[in-house]
Amino acid sequence: MTPAEFRALFPALRELTWLDTPGAPPGAAPVIEAMRETIDAWSSGRFEWHAWDDAAEQARELFADLLGVPAATVATVSSLSEAAATVAASLPRGRVVVAEPEFRSNRFPWLARHDVVSVPARRTEDLIAALDDDVALLAVSEVTSRDGHRLDLAALRAATDRVGARLFVNLTQSLGVLRFDPAAVRPDYFAVHGYKWLLCPRGAAWLVARPDRVDELRPLAPGWKSTAAPHGYFGGALDLAPDAGRCDASPAWFSWIGACAALRMLAALDADAVERHVLGLAARLTSEAAALGLRPVDDGPRSHIVVLATEYADRIAGSLAAHGIRATALGDRVRFGFHYFNDENDIAAVTRALAAGGELT
Image (tube, rainbow, N blue to C red; front, side):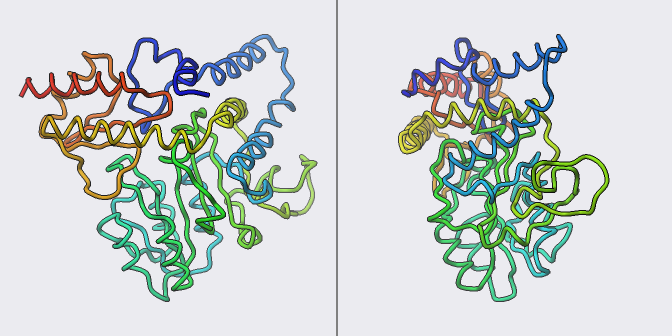
């Protein structure tokens, strides 16, 4: 599928220039249609809830196929914080290294249960320097929307191996546009909330444990989904499923129905082509912005998210809105994120808006 063909699946892009996927993307037609059919069935009463309940299992299989991991290592959860908290509760006691500016859903679950070493900067070299033989786990996000900085996961894996620590990776701001090879990185755990770059409804998230870590996982809130299928409803002993499914959350049906449609759509894309496309657009915008005197807030490795420093975020926000551009401007920065549906016309539109916003100063 070409970028133009992919773009055509998003009705909102007929009128808007969308660069706010780090916040949330517009709905894709296949996802919207799947959810509309579900709402219509609910409204008419012509639905079978058992079919809805199967959606989370289908999404587990689709996700496992997309990442090339065994489905038995995948838990279907409702958020990134639930995934991190599940690992935090299952982890043997020990120190956890987390960057101080890390996203809170990948920071607070560790603070709640472990002795945390807070690293002032979220850079690969600083995180590595904080590791020693007393560290049980390093928790990172490959990319965050705060700065667009991309960590070197291979280097972090090598460093954690040297001290015998585990590695937890949050892929919420990267999976769907940046390539990720679990076999190459070998994280002990990784997780993603699908409502950003995976284009799912909010409420569909996944936790993946390396096969040798699955047996240690324990559910945060055991329920009727914690046992092996077929699931029972009443009575019985707590007999946890033998795989990561023991940590499944009771599914919010509509979220998982939409997630299945989104994952099928993404499976039709070439991952290499998607990454080249989004990184190329991000580099182009960075260059155009530099010509206008705007520089990234971070000088580290670039990703598909471009965050520019500015003293005039409010004025630029007004200019972006006037030009029909969805992006985020807050405080001392303005943020743009590129998905496969973005194109060179979006770069031109943003450049015009930034130039106009600069004139307001």
